[in-house]
Length: 525
Image (cartoon, rainbow, N blue to C red; front, top):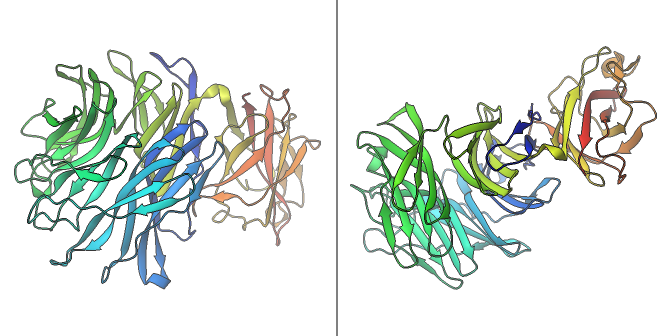
């Protein structure tokens, strides 16, 4: 169950207490098998985008399908926005369209990239083909694929993927990843530039037998662009660090400290200036994944320095002047060391990307196991509100457990998560209502005999004279995951700082009404 985590104190530049909230993520169809979010970009506190993929079985298409998946954050909820997915290639076992990266220039100029399955015209090899989407403020459109032409035999129409996007301006957009024209030919690092009218490929150096790929990119302007990844031979043997730097006219390979006896994979880069660049990833013994340890280095304009990280740092962000390492655990660079400041407490989760709005405001996206469902979370000031679940003392079995996902303000809404309505002891309710009041019945409420599942009784935890709110359908993430409701908060200036309580009332067609647990909370202004 998603929970509101205990507020933790920021240090070294982050001045307020913060809290991590798991956010509701809608997925369709409801019969999906797995889904994930791989990229996120922010335009403001109430305007963010996330992209990924969703997998489901489609009888009409005769098999499993992976579709592109895009969500928009409007300040209250994530909502799915339609995105194009290329048609299935002939004789392919399954259809796969995936988005791995996104970056925004403005609300009407956003790029997303990934790959979709295609069949090589001569070899018949089925692999990735570059997928580019663009959002113009109204809808997402598929941009016709562009292929690298570096000379035979590297004529790529299969085995090309976008892993990272760095959008500097409308006429200066970089796309990074890998490309390969044939399964027997090593992959090359892909660097594609868009100048507002046309695409141009930049040839990258080969390493050894050449298995080269970019996984992340960042810039401090048009003349300071960095891209990082790995290089080595096929089958992931002997991987080296792979770091390239663009100065506005040419690319230069950079060489952070590394051991020739270890393998490296660089997953993130943060470019604050030409003299302040952070790179993170991991190193391990060849093909021994259990030996992997964090790898974090800093460039000061003249040399690289390795720093000791207490845990893996898959993503780096600049949060209003402070450097954060973001994964399931969040670390802050204090100037001399990395300090853990928050823990998502999701041991099977994978945070694939993060983007900062400001000093105390960071969006995180990825996936949560073991069912592989999409995960979105937000690190934000605790002053926006706090919430604590409260359980019944008596009565029948607890029908639902509540938790706060997004703390509301006056005139907006409190997003409340409820344990999956479809897999608990109670049947799915046909209607859901909410009690909202300033008079909690605590520590115990009033048991209403004859109500609840099978008439076993249910406990009222909010004063009977509380405000009664009727709500529409919930936003469901997936079976086994919480359903989410947005409880409207009246536009009353007296409410901030007061102790408020909310409790859901579930009406079933075949059972008496039942109450959920309660949620005690305070809202910000």
